[in-house]
Length: 208
Image 1 (cartoon, rainbow, N blue to C red):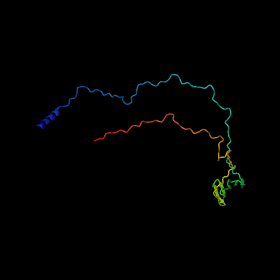
Image 2: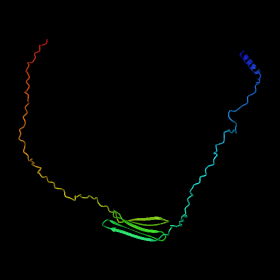
Image 3: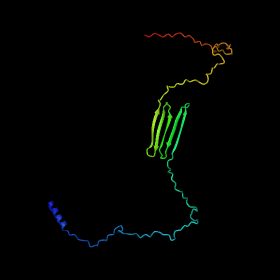
Image 4: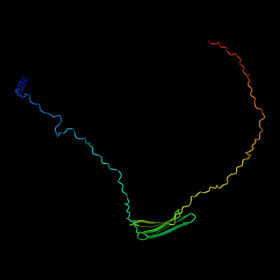
């Protein structure tokens, strides 16, 4: 029975034909402007007067003298030969050192120096230097190192110790003033000694 009623409802709905409306459709108007829209605002403001052309009252500065022309000068001088040597030897202050050096016209330098070290050896350095190999040194030592034993100085003051002597004898010192002659105080109270009465001992009755 239910199936029959459902089939009848489907037939009724399908039998109703579509009937268009008699009213014309309203034209579509978009809410935003179409592409290529140009607003109708006015052109930017342009002042009616021309911009001022400022001209200074004083002329531009021009020096009356020409710029100095410095001659080009090269400081690349060729090597100049030289030679020097000096030495110091003073046994009292233990200063013993020397230095000598020689250079030729090609810029090659050779020399040596020696120094007396505190341990008794002499340091000798022979060196050479030029623009191609640089500085090359050969260090040698002459003599044997000597180290002194542990130094323990004996302190001796430059001035003698003071011999202090008091003006009075420390033993058997007696003052110049005599001992006091007053007797020793005997203490006596101002009030008499208290005397308490003698009461007989109490007698308690015997208990049954």
